[in-house]
Length: 165
Image (cartoon, rainbow, N blue to C red; front, side, top):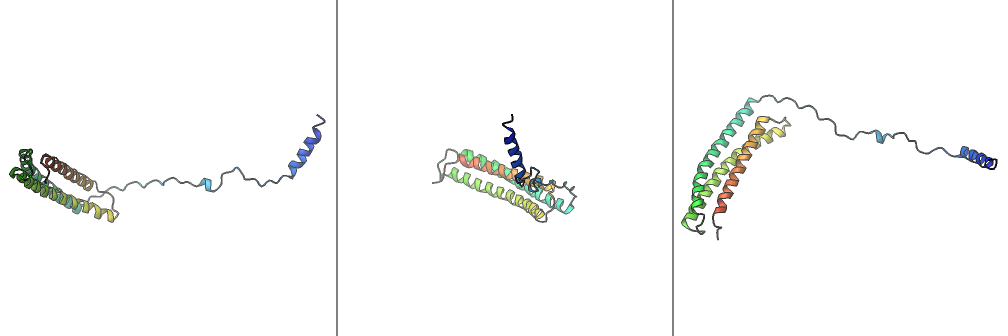
């Protein structure tokens, strides 16, 4: 044990000479920053807007009217495309079916026009940074669904016919 005493004494003396500027283990200022997203403010309750409600009602009536016109034209086009399903391109039955499909596409265009009016109302509201208006959002979604369903029906009928040469 006496052999290690000078070695221990030397280690103790050298330890006193060491510099003590090593980094602290305390958290640094950059480690204390909070990078989480701030909480969103509570949504403000939507106040009724009679003028907007009136414009939404007008646009919804246009969507319904266009949908009724589409349904009427769809029945005729469905009957004619079914009759022309095996007819060659350019035949009388094929031409009548194509004409009915063109009328059907025009009826769908009226649906899309009404949808565009509703989307313009939503866009105008968004530009002013107004909160969402649930009645307007529902009307836009319903009009979009109607326009997509109409496009699907037209495509289904179009597939029945022979392709044009």
